[in-house]
Image 1 (spheres, rainbow, N blue to C red):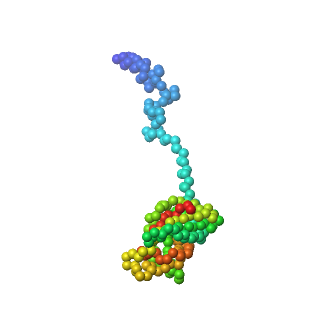
Image 2 (cartoon, rainbow, N blue to C red; image 1 turned 180 degrees about the vertical axis):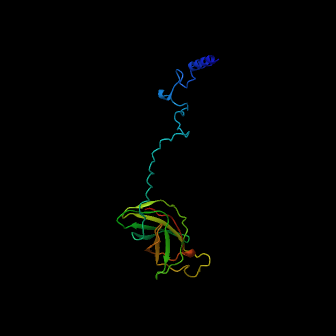
Image 3 (cartoon, one colour; image 1 turned 60 degrees about the vertical axis):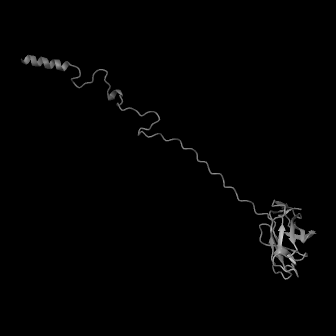
Length: 209
């Protein structure tokens, strides 16, 4: 019986894999074997997040456009003028107001400007403008010494409550001209009597003379 047990133990020692030694062909760490964990797909970081994309270059914003150049409008300081009477018909008077650039550089006019009748003592008299004579506004560029003009039309027949036995309005001595988009006037002589309908003018915009 003792001999049988010894024989069985001897056979067990000879069986492969029972001694804890690796079988033939089994990789070990010493053989450079890797672990069984799978590598992440190409283009994916080990954490599973998408790979960062290359940063696009930041373009500098275009420079802000500069403001418009300094105004070259004609001002009262560089303008002189005169009123030239034209045709008269059935209580209506027609005239042309001319203005000249006396400054050393060109300037511009665009639009109608303003008018103000004044008495001999300088007192402002009733004045209004209709702005309904042709032509309409267009840019007028006046070289030094050049002239622009506008048409004037007014009535000499009393209207509304104006008196009929004496002048319909006080007689003006001067006409103040305010260039378009300006506030300061220059003055021209007025020798054409009262302007009825409370000093109403029908005028055009300035145009190249």
